[in-house]
Picture 1 (cartoon, one colour):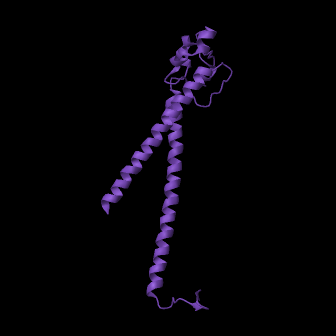
Picture 2 (cartoon, rainbow, N blue to C red; picture 1 turned 45 degrees about the vertical axis):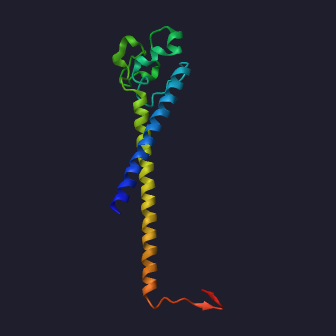
Picture 3 (cartoon, one colour; picture 1 turned 180 degrees about the vertical axis):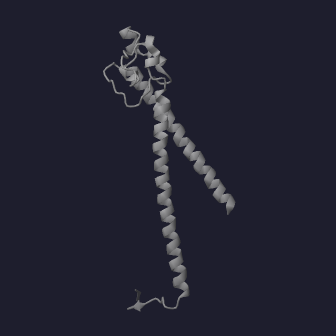
Length: 155
């Protein structure tokens, strides 16, 4: 009995690990695609990060090579840096955090909420099954519960 529970726990951990690993790989592919197709028009600053691994990742993009101005997108500028012009010459004005790690972390947090919700739902179902079993056990022992036969059919 205990071994069955241990095996299912290990299986669940392996399954969760595969989910997280798959999320990380998909995020990496998506971010690579965004970096390759970036054209300099989206100054979104929601994530507070710069580059896949850091701001130097922008040096390998077509946008960086075409502009030849040694700068990264304005979204890489720290909110606290008031005079940031997104130049690599002023690296202290840029976010040092990696976007890939930040996105993966956010997705893993969301996945944990989904997993906890699924576990709560499973616990409610198990509680319902336990209650049904208790009612059935009491019904079989209590003489007050009798089958009613009406016209040859059970009621």
